[in-house]
Image 1 (cartoon, rainbow, N blue to C red):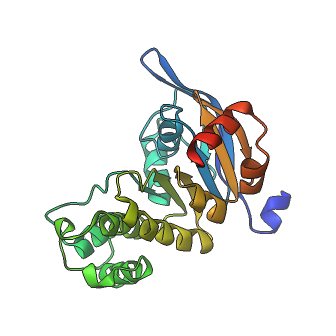
Image 2: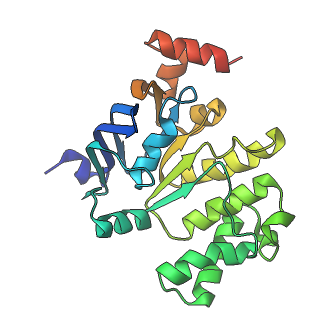
Length: 252
């Protein structure tokens, strides 16, 4: 029996030799990464390094052309059923909030559970309110997105992703579109989620969050993973010159 399975820890995401091209541009050049259940992995690196493209391949928002991606035991292929199953297990939060402007906060959060999971409205609204309390904005439930700050909208987006009860959460630079004073409230919501045992991959430049929440950090550059390690290893003793240079530029 697999030792990891004995303790209840299993491989939730297994990417092996993943390649991605946009026409002739080779964006991912053999990325391999395994993420275990309950693990928080922060992916960082310069713009254009393939970070966002990589996590978007995990729920098939981008199609990889070579290599293998397995999510919770299901391989991502062109099989539509597999893609649909995997997407139900993954919540994703983007730079832009992508909320429906004509729906209230609670309507945004309950829409997918009612349509996809076929929950009754009362059940969906009860869970939505629990999630809005969890991200610290229950009083905003009946407002429209335009009435909220950017930080509040991003926390609604997190609640909306959690409403589908995913096993994995992917964050693609969730604070990069926010004013500085709003970043902390979103990171606090993510920190609470990390502490709860959610499996998470976060593409972010927020090194304070990485230091506090990540089990592992992965540095990408030029479509490849250059280095990975614990936050302590990465911050205190990075091995690769490219990692050292990047950290020196962002850690003022």
